[in-house]
Image (cartoon, rainbow, N blue to C red; front, side, top):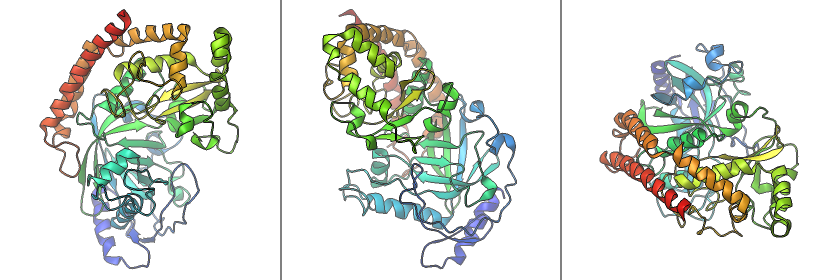
Length: 489
């Protein structure tokens, strides 16, 4: 069933709405009684989903486009010099269930400052304890349909703040076989080889470039990081396609990044979140080293060893031994290069200011925990929470952020860091290269960014977009000057 047919089916479906829970229809004009599905990281809290719309034929299915047997097609999905379009079609009742769930998590839509809902934690400034619910939806791309794709809202502060401000340009998570148990037709469904993708809403980024550009810089510096691309997103929830604006499509680390950028994907992958993510003394907590794979194996010895060695007394009594022991469990070279890139470009919403937004992967090839950056929409600016880290980390408290403080205090590691800082401004974050990139990306997305609609944008006027891009050009020049000052002192 094609896109226009599906919209008609959704409209017909609403005429049959009558149950004690909410009722929704599929693209085949059938009726479904459904409750919320759980998040994508755990089965805890999942509720039973009653499926009555499984009688359909996946007519657009091909091995290349839909099957797990196809290799991920990065050129198709993550094309740098294009703005592609995704349409998400959700039945009216399923959409309402997503909105009702958000109300339960964060309070009434547009009710900024009025506190969270029943599951929203301790008020309007807190994060919810649960992820928003998944619902089945259809995804359309280049006249092809992907069937019963799991779709949910995603994010923490960006999600809460956007919702409470009355902006429906929310980030989405897509899981193409989330509902395969309910729909055998989509067993191991993929989107050109990808199981999961994130659609980031470019929260508080009026240039709409920060997420993509920062990730480009990490990758161009030789670090493992997600592929990204620009997309326009349209959502049809019963009244025809609504333009939700320019999004950045981001490759999920726990989907294809490991497979594509490491020789082995079987090592432990962690997404630390909470006090333990700081690696400060005494913070070890297995619950906060969130495993994204190998969940059934209760072995956290790798992150525990890192914490113990990092704080071992040999750091001050025998630095050479300390470095040897640390390098046996932690890829210090990768971390120092990451640290140089992250500090040169300025990125406050991660380690050094916030206890989240990075991954650690125990690379089986080296048996070392390796740093992977994540969530870069707040990069390329001085930032909040006291601002981004200074190049010499003079505004970072070592006891709170020992991975930065201890390594920078060590003369061997500081020398390596300084070398990488110079390499960053000479290469991946070179002023002329970056300003050329900004110009190219500005021209690419301007026709789509400047027509975002009220209620689906973070722009006040279309001129905000050009102003924000201009600020990025100024920023890269200022950072080059800052690096020269730092290295010459």
